[in-house]
Image 1 (tube, one colour):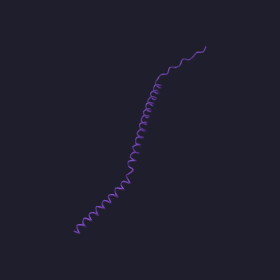
Image 2 (cartoon, one colour):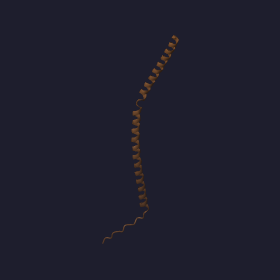
Image 3 (cartoon, helix red, strand yellow):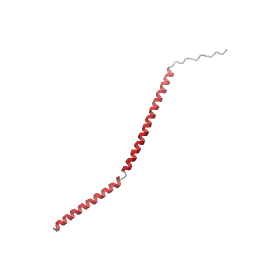
Image 4 (cartoon, helix red, strand yellow):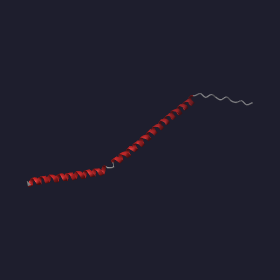
Length: 92
């Protein structure tokens, strides 16, 4: 009977030790990873900001491309167009 009691006591002590180790590991993990939600929210806000800036940059690029095409077209028009000489004004 005493050996059964000692056996159960040893098993109980082992379980208590395992529980304490597991509890310690949990709290260490919790200390190291408790800030992840705030970091995640910061990253989401940075992403949204950068996505908006990227959209603005894309739109400005389109404006620049269109302006450049118009400039090239007008330059080509002026180069290829035959200029009519101005009639000279006669003074009397």
